[in-house]
Length: 348
Ligand code: GLY
Image 1 (cartoon, protein in one colour):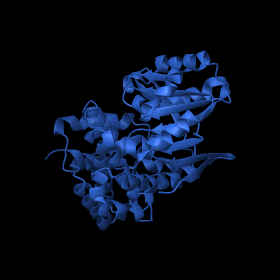
Image 2: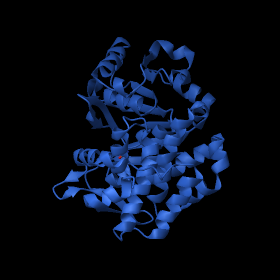
Image 3: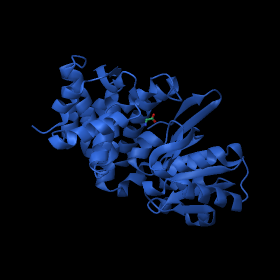
């Protein structure tokens, strides 16, 4: 696996680096003025000698709020950090989003390093500069674009990740495999299932690198999601968000995305946009990794699905836009009618 850089703003690059536990420990210990933010699941990754500069937050989306943000800022102030100091977020997407937000507003912007500790955050939240907290029940309502200077990928952190969390991250990786014309990630996933599922560090590192490089293709062209290019990364997400809501978030995000990918491509085939063999490639990969794409929603829940769909932020004046593919790495936005959605997602 090779380090690489991602340019999101003129003069600002994110360096993506790969290392092991020893390298991580040495790197974190070498930062002279820093606050380390973790949660109960990730604090083990921060060396003990740094504990006085470490804030451990409660885990979970329900803590992605102003209280946690204020705790981070108070701790930074207590440590007398300046704007040339570094905020280091070690954890999943909740920790990295909040640490990035705190870093972006502390003295108008401090330095930022993200050490993602879940597969989902390694392949998604860590790169791309999105920072946020939830507010009044609305996810990511308050936030900024603030790319990290460094993203440090430590595949060894995935060794102890619960299976459901691992499969959730893998759902986003599989989605990335179809968002690029270069089929390297697709072939890597087809050929390395054993190493991936055994969590071989080298194999996971390469997979994360290939996956992040797909995300890089989109975010470098549209860093602040203003041109309709970055939003293609939301392939499968309109279906996924609805499924997550209906199931009260019992279906994990990336697992819902894997299902949403299948639905988005089935929709594309029905609308004569997506070639059938592209959908078959996705079916094959999803079933190789054991995702249940046969899941369908009770008929009486479909209206609820529609109402979630309508609340989705991807709605515009012509209706709810869904993303699908017209070829490998060729995204298109479509507005399917409700009968087609019902046909795709409802139990018969
Ligand atoms: N999760 C998609 C993005 O970062 O834009």
